[in-house]
Length: 478
Image (cartoon, rainbow, N blue to C red):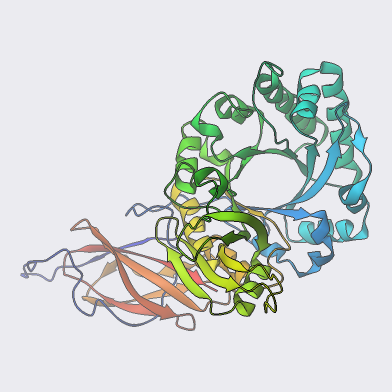
């Protein structure tokens, strides 16, 4: 992710080291530039080089769902900042055969899908086929009846090969073991192991992933038992959204909080890390929010209705809403807004005769989530869903900031003076500005945030104490 430079400043002969505080000297950075992406953790250690996830050197898995209803937008997507695109979806019947009706099946045979796969492969991205089914009873039959399991696996492997996919994503959403379905959890784990083995054997290099709940790693009795599931798949996509309905039922609130309540992103990752390797964990994030019909404009107001709203449509609502008040929820680290929707002549066309609150994610809150992914060192993040961006460029540039555009730095390991230049580059990336931080290794102090640097600059001038060693790091913003 980031390059961290270590350098030492020589102590002149006969000189003594001055008394130092934990703060850097005034004027530590006097001008200019800088770039290097912030490393995964605030540590003076040099980060381990990361695997490249696509042809453009993407440093984390960026796993994005492409729903069939958004395929007509596929030419507008930035494949350079994605690593896996998962076409959503075709559906299995309870007996392992295909449900051959609806938009997902039609999209599977569409020219838009062919074009999407071609664009993805040109960028070095994988494309997975998403498989769904019709609820708990259907899941149980598919994963616990051996003949049905084999029919389903054969059909899945064939469907992947038929359209040139690079693997499969299983989206089986239902309830865990019960008196009616006592073996559904162990059956699902076994089914995933068989499917993975078949995919790897018949399509070497293919990947098998599964979508799991944000709280699945908090216990062992649900549909997904993470510690036994992890060895049987290549990766798990945590569906870390729609949390407000469990965290604060009947109230408006954050869709995907970073902290707080029963379910949040930080807790979910920490729990998964106790049961699965970091290399198999993908944090899903929402490119959508919820418009709540509320009793007032107070934070977390009681809500009688919630409507999912894409990032693009949320921006439309914020533009047309009357006297919109904006807020930032410190605990969840997400934005929200409130306004009154009149019964008639509502500029937004909602005509609710009630207060409304929009709880959503924007590039700022998404950047915090992306930073968490980097800090925890997990495989990467995922998006539900492509098309919700509405073509707005900031959603793509934020991905680029956190997961692409690696920066390099050049400086002599030993400096003869207390003022020296650090040269920085972000390759061919179009950089707007850089965040730069400094660490005093000798005094074990930092990381100190330095002034932002313009993207057009080629380096920055730093100052330090004689005899001390320093490290620098930066994040480029496109």
